[in-house]
Amino acid sequence: MRGTALVCCIILILVNTTACNLGWKRSQGVQVLPGVDLYSSPGYNSSGSEAPSAEVSRRVAFTLPDGWYWVWRGNDFISTRNGIFLQNITVERIQVGQVEQSDGPFPQAAISSRQWPFRTVKYLKKRLASGMSPMDVADVVLSSRANNPGVAGLEIKEVMMQTVAGYQGFKAVYDFRLEVQGRKTPYRTLSYGFMLDDWFYGISYSAALRYYFQKDAEEFDSVLRSFRLVEK
Image (cartoon, rainbow, N blue to C red):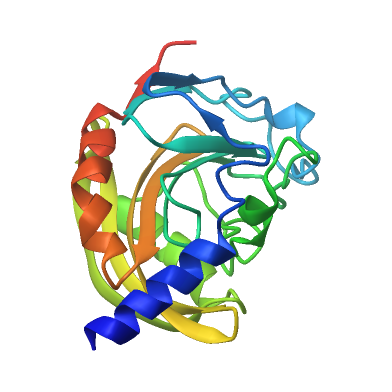
């Protein structure tokens, strides 16, 4: 069993050797993400909707541990230590009228970040709305995962209300499988998020269930504890 797990890990490492080279940056410490202007995004749909109460998202700050690389995928911030298909931390800001998510320009966005299949907005069955309860927001996010054709065997382990960055939000834990080099690899995700005005703020940790999830879970916990919104 150990031998099989080790072989799988080696294969995944080889597959992702470019994940921390092309387009990825390395800087630890406090990261401050600029606000997202919804009108500058081609994914905003204003037809039939009222003027948003907050046109620009709040800035987000958190502390990234040493040894982690990061890249912008459109407006999403994605970080990894060994390769995005081994472990990753993703920060999202999504406006209630948003209907698309950009992958960002190449080569600024690393190839592997485009291959990671999570696109919350793209696979939404339901829409986010200002004033939604934390559990309703969790339901919207989880429905996106369930509707994603790249995600197999989704199994929700836990959904609960939890304070995130000082706001009433949710915590969701779910398992799934992704096809990596012809293998169905099991993963686990810890997902946290909340609504503020017209914006969803989310942070999640996904990792291969064998070895990597437990290996870096404590480091994600430190990132989560440092996660906060910054005044404009």
